[in-house]
Image (cartoon, rainbow, N blue to C red; front, side):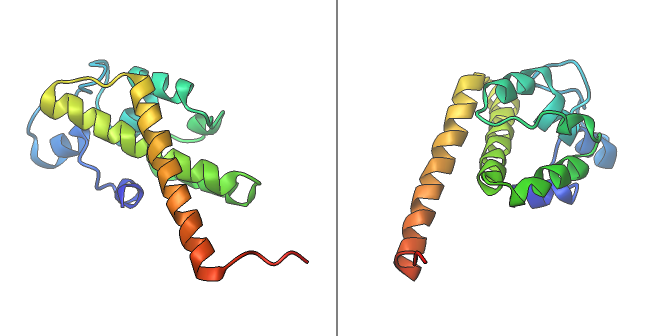
Amino acid sequence: MFIWKGLSDAVPVKELIWRRIKVGDPTCTMCGEEVETLEHMLLKCSKVKDIWKLAPIHWDGIEHKSDKFKDWWAAVSETRSRVQGKAHIGLTTYILWQIWKSRNNKVFSNKGTDPTTVVNKACNAWCEFENAAGKARKWSIGKPVVA
């Protein structure tokens, strides 16, 4: 749902709120350096770059492909057919979600979350989902047939 909202320009970042109703300060709460657009908040903020540096996956070069989240996500999605592509996309989704939650923690409670905690929460949630999904697939279709 979060990715869909991002692709639909529906994540309520400060710039979007400012553009629609002219309320509040559009400056990023996490870094205080730039306007908080979706792209800034998820990919370009100096605080978020620290999170991506610690993440076990890297999307080298993709951030320079476009200034729009939709184009960045399209580039990420193109990796689906690679050996670990689906896993990388899945983990990326969890990292983006944890960045959003960390941002909200700062905005609404004025509490920062250190980058290591953000990455660990994303990895743990992703692993938990993968384990549950793996068991569900096993129960649904049985053991794979090896030819």
